[in-house]
Amino acid sequence: MNKIQNELQKLSRRILNEIAFEVINPESKIPLGFKKHTRSISWLAEQVITQHLETNQKKYDLEFFETSKTDISVYDFKIKFKDIKELIYVNSKITWIQQKKQRNDMSSIKKLFKFYEEHKNVKLFYLIFPFEYFGPKGNKIKFLENVTCGEYIKMKDFYLNPRNEHLQAFYEVENVDRTYSEFLEIIKTKQKKGNKIFIRDL
Image (tube, rainbow, N blue to C red):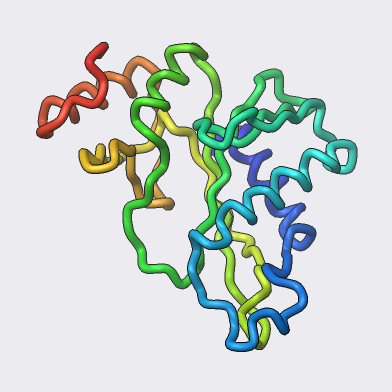
């Protein structure tokens, strides 16, 4: 694990208890209980994480923090630690601990390619926050400590989905040493082996 991954995971563990929340208050609005559906709370949870960090930068010794200006970007926020010189781009994601293990959408292939074209050698990481529902009605969201952190260009194995044009991988995908150029070469190879060309500039 490199220094950036280590710092991101340390930060994640520090905020876990602070970002637990109730989905609906009062619970009387859901007399039959809250149905467990990750997509229903994913955006809310990401907002809670991002806004908590943005409003507590001094508490967590952050030198810089800025949220993405759009909801459809490949990252949610930019962050800088005091003892790391690089500006780090982070895409936060949520996963229910009891959800069946499967490949997950990590990013739009075209948006990811465009981002790297416009930001050469930028550090783009993903942070996967596992959570569980708890309480009598399953209305409360609690985050767990086993946060997964990795760098997009270093994902050892990923799949290019021709149906939704997303790069997909298991959240626990291993990271390997790889450069930006090597990452694009792998995308190029995967395109040729499939039945769809996602990026024609390669």
